[in-house]
Length: 449
Ligand SMILES: Cc1cc2nc3c(=O)[nH]c(=O)nc-3n(C[C@H](O)[C@H](O)[C@H](O)COP(=O)(O)OP(=O)(O)OC[C@H]3O[C@@H](n4cnc5c(N)ncnc54)[C@H](O)[C@@H]3O)c2cc1C
Image 1 (cartoon, rainbow, N blue to C red):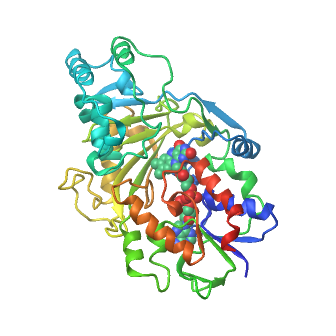
Image 2 (image 1 turned 90 degrees about the vertical axis):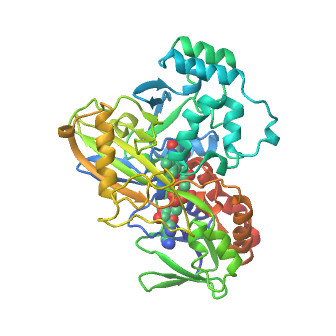
Image 3 (image 1 turned 60 degrees about the vertical axis):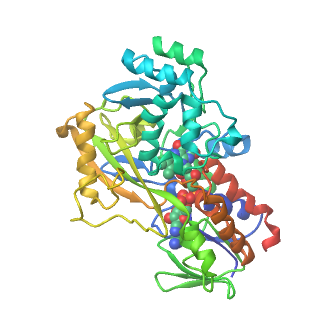
C-alpha cells in the first residue's frame, strides 16, 4: 500500500521524482518493457530513433537545470524546411515564398492583401483563422493540406485556442521581402532547440529516473477506486493509498469499475491522432540535409520527416545517417482505429480523401520509401535499416467538443480520487516541459490524499 503512479512517461517520472524527493515512497507501473513513453526510443543495428521528432525548448530555469544536470545538451538553431510540389522552401513558408513561381507568388500575395478581416474572438474555427491570417490561396495550399495530414481532419473541424505561438503570422512587408529573397532570420517560435549529446531524447530525464522503482510489463486493465485497487493484465494487482495516472483518458474510462455511462462516452468521444513512425537508416553519411521538414503534397504520406543523426551523431553508427517520417490519422476511443494486420486494403487514401488507417503497415512503409526516393532524398540500395511502428496516442485533437468532454471525465476522476496528469491525462497539447511540470504539480494536490 502506498502511492502508485501509472505510466513512466515524462509526467509519471516527474511525479515520481518530486514525490520521492519530498519523502513519499512511490511505485510506477508501466505497460511497456522500458521507460520514457513518448520520450522513449528504440535502436536497430546501431541506429537509434526517438518516438517522433523531440527537442526540448523548456523556458523554465528549474526544468532547464534538471535536464542540463541529466545530460550534456546540443543546441540547434531551428531552420526547418518545407517540401511543396517538388520545391524546397525555408520555414515558415508564408514569408519565404522566393522559390515559388511568379504566378503562385502573385496569387498568394493578392489573397493576403485582400484577406477578410475579423476580430479573433469572432473567428469560428481553425479554417477561418487560417484564411484571416494568410488569405485564401496560401491557406488552402499550405496549412489546409498540412492540417489534413497532421491532424487527420478538415481545418473547419478544429477550434483555435491551441494555436497560440505555434503559427507564425507575418505582416505584408515580411511576405514581400520573403518573396524576393531567402530570409536568414530564424522565425521559429523557439530560437534554440536542445537535444542530448548522448542516449537519445529521454536522457534529459536521467537525473529523475535514477533510483525510481518502475515495474515494467504491467499493463493496467482495471481500476476499482472504492477498493483502491489496480489490476494488471498479467493477473497481478496492487492496492494504493494515492493513485496518480498518466494514462490516456479514453483508456482509463474503460478501466474503472462502476463508471457512469455518460462519463465513459465523453472519454471515448475525445479525439486524438494516432501515428506511424517510418524509421530509415542509411549506409551513407549525408542523406539528411534538414533537422526536420514538412511535406504539403497530399499524395506523399508523411506530414513531417526529421533527421535523428543531425539531432546528435550519437544516434547512428559512424559514416551513416538516418531519417524518420511521421504519418498521422484521426482516431478516438469510439472509432478505435488500431493498426490493421497484414493483408488489409492496399489503398492508402480513404473515401474522405485522407490517409486510410486500414492500410497494412508494410504497404505504408513501402509507399513512404517510394515517395522519399521520388523526392530525390536517397536510393533504395542506400537503406541499411527500415522499420515501421505504430503509436496509438500522438496528439490531442482540438475538435469543438474537446472542452466539454474532457471536463466530464476529469471532474469524475477527481471525484473518485484519481489524480490525472500529463499530455493524455490532462488531454492537453503539452510539450515535454509542460508534461514534466504537470507531473511536478502532484506535490500540491494534498486535497486528494
Ligand atoms: C509527433 C510528436 C512530436 C513531439 N515533439 C515534441 C518536441 O519536439 N518537443 C517537446 O517538448 N514535446 C514534443 N512532443 C510532446 C511530448 O512527447 C509529450 O508532451 C510528452 O512526452 C508526454 O508525456 P506523458 O508522460 O504525459 O505521456 P506519455 O509519454 O504518453 O506517457 C504515458 C505512459 O503511460 C503508459 N501507459 C499507457 N497505458 C498504460 C496502461 N494501460 N498500463 C500501464 N501503463 C500505461 C505508456 O506506455 C507511457 O509510458 C511531441 C509529441 C508528438 C506526438
